[in-house]
Image (cartoon, helix red, strand yellow):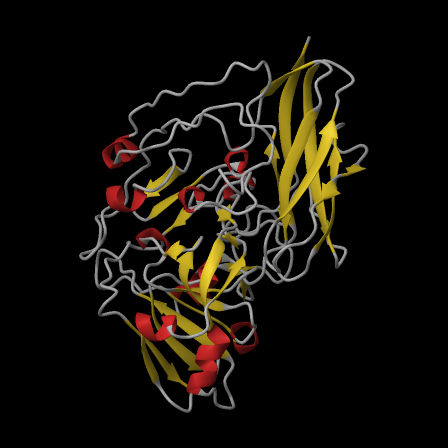
Length: 423
């Protein structure tokens, strides 16, 4: 429970402890401490959900879903089983550092079974010296850690109208902010020696589809981002080795950028004279360069997704929580942005007519989300709402309705939570 809300625990979390139960979604029972007030953020019942729709059969050499899901809380609801995707919603995200058991899941293909003792990372392309590095080679390099956001580009997709096709991420699902452990990518590239003319650095993952014809997962980022001191080859999460679902034994991590830029099960790095050409660069993870009307298709001149726009979510209260009249309600939430910084977060209790500035915790690591809070005493009873709106240091304000994206990327609309105040 360290790193969770500093407020008292008022509910008992029902944790999933049996692999088969997680997959078959057997209902679980929880108990709440009878305190007369609402449950704390992140402490609500961890009830099992209905089975997610299955996709194609798993590829050979895959780790079965029950095995990779064994360490996840049941509040991580599955959206699909093949490829495996799942996430908790905002009320289960009230942590300064996201525990691994609450970190969202996003596979494009399978979860490969990797023998760490035989695994090597190849560095090739526009380099002075090609490298072949084992896990032990990387462990002998300078290790460091950072707390940082990771978010799927499609996070919040179901809030778009009309709803685009793709993983059915809820409005506040598909993101997390764990502690990353590993080595600087820049240090590895310096060992190889980047040649002039280099423009992009591509990452190759080991995940595969059910058929050999399925394109492998490859994504590239500009050299400037690759050489940024925060971009890393992650070997661990929250001071433990990466779990299979999060990229064991190593992955790239491009903080502040969409999750597709951080490739799991990393096997090769290639320095290129231009952006990589492939499915995950040219067909998906793209945004229009000009506004398009809701429902329109992606224009031909679209660009690859990079850093996240300003965003926030309310982690307490939960939707439809109940409070007693006269009770102070501790509003809490998290705010983040890709390459700039959060300047302020405002809250509204009258559907956006007026706004009040929330308290904002001191900034931590460069790409970590920030906690905002306000103690609110309602002046009336009945159903009420709270809205959160973040602003970054470039003056960008979280919109009520984000620009339409035909693929359902970059949803960052104002988050709204309703609650009851009773006599």
